[in-house]
Length: 280
Image 1 (cartoon, rainbow, N blue to C red):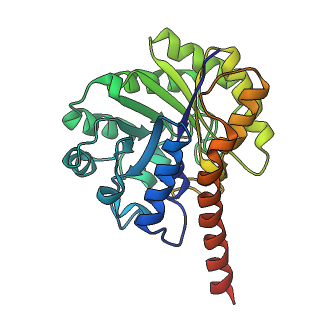
Image 2: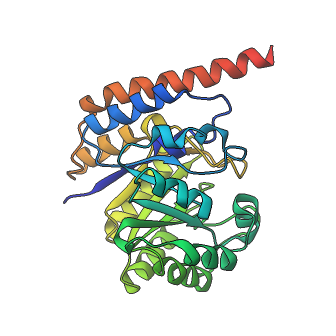
Image 3: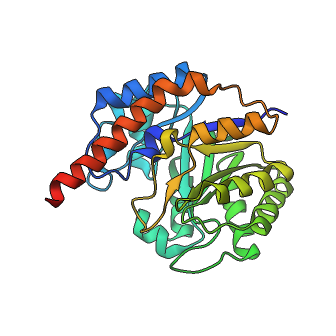
């Protein structure tokens, strides 16, 4: 069976780092990921530099992949560099929406509706905290159904993001079913808190329920800067190894990922050393 990996390292993997990664290193990472055979890469985010300083060089970083936009200004910036694959985001949890974007979910949907002009097949819609929030608790099926209907206004793919690593097998099963019932393609974006096995177990459940697209970040870099304890992304190399062991074809080989892994490890090491220096 063919499955696809959606690489989010250059954006979600870097956005929460406290110390800046230079543009040259970001471009080297993106180039190494494409050379490894990855075809779907979220390269950057056109976020406000004050809120997400790590993405301040988005215009210089963008090459050919997808980008995250969270308002009209970000969308216009993305259009100015020719980006035609757009990711947008909202959450069932309005506390998170306000912390992240300064608006409620209904206000976010109205905002996107006012300027999104590209075909639905070019848009992925992220539902952050799709499996629960530290602010509002579990997500009810009724609320998720409403979120999926909002997502359907903008894109054909809905990405269920386990932002704080609390997802369950039953939720993955039900959310996938809801997506298919709404003629949308479901994808999973999973964080974990040091135990990748938990995320891998959810991926297995996703596969059994027809999900074939999975986000990952090279080297396991990443997390959400707008909520505490969001954990790390599942590593791309972990996914590749397990897909091979499970007899699935993702079109990527571990050996080809090595140059990108080395760059990701250097970035992680620099972040760690910088923090240690500041703590002295």
